Image 1 (tube, chains in turn purple, yellow):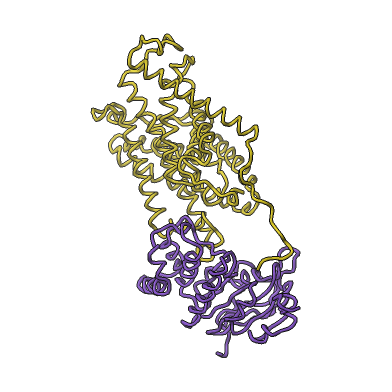
Image 2 (spheres, rainbow over the protein chains, first blue to last red; image 1 turned 135 degrees about the vertical axis):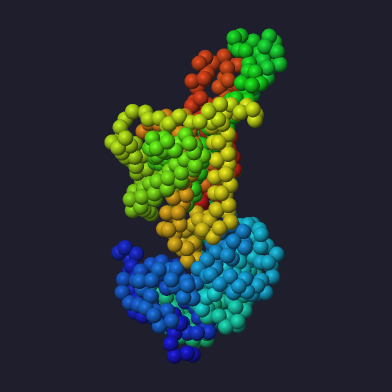
Length: 241
Length: 378
């Protein structure tokens, strides 16, 4: 573990109008980790991601990226500094071609040669994507779209990849495949922060995790401990008697 | 994870039985198609032989058209339609990105025509208009494009951006207000009367041996075609164009890619304004007279063109413009005259909007529009 976290939330509070969506949230994501944030519906998972990306301004507290407080920086700045997200349900630009989707991932970059190199890396990771390059993204299967969505995120040359509910809306077989993809990307050295409802699945590949409940972090532990945690099992994973 | 508490969501509405509205629409569709077919057949019959009974059936006085007249109608329809198409692009692009109809766009076109009127008269006073017509034309086009793009951008900044995120009806109503504002601003600044463009050189006015077309109409069709190709290239091939399409499809994700959504929207308005400015100049060259209400009817027809082509679709806007232009030019004499309708040449506008209604009846998403899934249609 490096001394300074890559991406951090310090005592963050966030509101939607009168709704207190995040309450004193502390998170730290270190270089090279695969971590997950668990929680049910309306627990504040998506709000956390929005706050990290600058789509929502925290009412208090700090969002720190590479040691820099980025509270007032727009999304585009944070993306250029190495945060990116694979959105829930993939959200590809369906009317654009796969290639255009990947190009848009690299929208903020100007280094044409390195962009081309990164695109080759995406093709190595997902050979299927290369076959579909000139097809409209909306015509791909769910699994292929997931690959393009991850590929698009990787095209921004991120330091940390945020994943919003990667198992959402996929068939069970694809969920398995998807978590394998995430693991595969993590093995290339990528820092991954995923937000999931599918706690068992997420914890089986993660190093550490947090559990969020109505905007508060109620558990912060290693994946093994969380898997074994009786309260979590009872209330949430649904495996206890 | 499935939610055990929720057994089933509301059943999807499939196989809905036909309601009265559906039957009514079907009747309307059949009636429209019948009207068009009968009119067309009668026209063809009278072209074959004016005295045959089918041609005499509805309108004994109809004489049909000579080939030359017919060609003339087509050409004027195409050139008019090309202008509608240019204006329609602005409606379509703004709709694509923001999802509302900017009714003030017709007035941006009027601003372009007015700008052209002022600059061309200044050039005529300086003697440049006659001595170097092509140069002057390029100059007034450039000025008009700049003024219109600026008008559209200011409009977005002042009137629409503060309303971003409010229900769609609100910017729509605002756009009608902006439209009145621009019309009245024109009256205040330039007076209420009609103003004319300076005389154009003979080669623009006269018909050319090339296909018997007036110079001005060739100019209009040519300029519109070039603008359309440039716009297509810009939107399809450049990085900014890609960003525009991305914002149109999913602004939130576009932002996640690092695209500045506000700036992209400003560019869309500027581009739409530029096209309207171009159309304004062409209008001025063709009809040589502008007034503060010049933008209204072409604006509404261009909006219809955008809908006919499938709103949000650029090629569709141009195709819709051409269809409406040709229909309103050819339709009255070809379909209505043989049916015995009187005073057909005054029914141009009615025909233009009948095309809109017809397309909405037969293909509600427009000629090129994609059928939206229900979730996107909010």
